[in-house]
Length: 275
Image 1 (cartoon, rainbow, N blue to C red):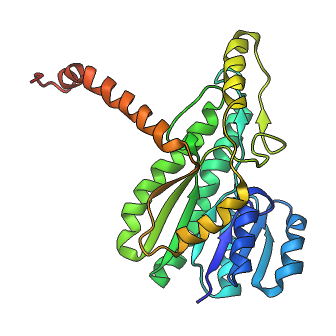
Image 2 (cartoon, one colour):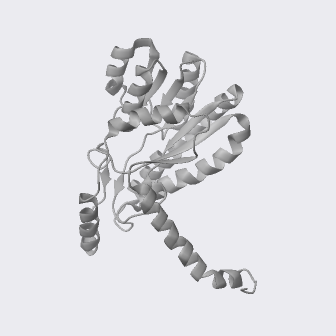
Image 3 (cartoon, helix red, strand yellow):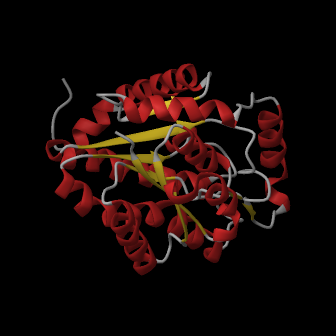
């Protein structure tokens, strides 16, 4: 049976590739973007299998209305993909209040509003799969993208809670954690804070690190996302990339070692006596 997808940020990048992959195999897609004209190609190629709709995910009322229209059009929702988002580049001191709030409103609250709007439909069906597009930056953190990390760590947190809350309702949740791909996340789609001279060395080191990082092929994620949504028991978390697993093993080993080293203090802070 063909699946019905609801995809935010479907104008380009992962959202567009995943919409194309779903439509090419006969699924139906509600494709949303801030500028629906960017979706004309999908409609021309796939006709009635596509509902292209304008959506700013920071507008909760618009999110509610768009999800409702999607359900009216296709009668169900099987896969909800929270893909809309962007990168904010700047040290914590450099990022402005306006930039920080906009980042959280889009990357975190936008995903939350779409999730909340879809849940009553999925509950009524007794089925559905929510795909939350996070990042390697949802489980680790690097200089100059702190507010981006804050948005993705928040997404990871509420999604892990959500997965436990809806497990008995037939609803699945998967957090996809891509590494760097040749999309325009760090290009035209990104927002950049005004740099301060005090952080020149931080930027220099960060740019050198990024210059040597491998870059993935976005097209390769199309078959992968189909395999993921077709899985009988999909994971809560999955990396998209060939290097993050070893990097995260190292990061978590450091965290455990530090927690263990300071565990005596932790126990005393609770009023206990270290063993």
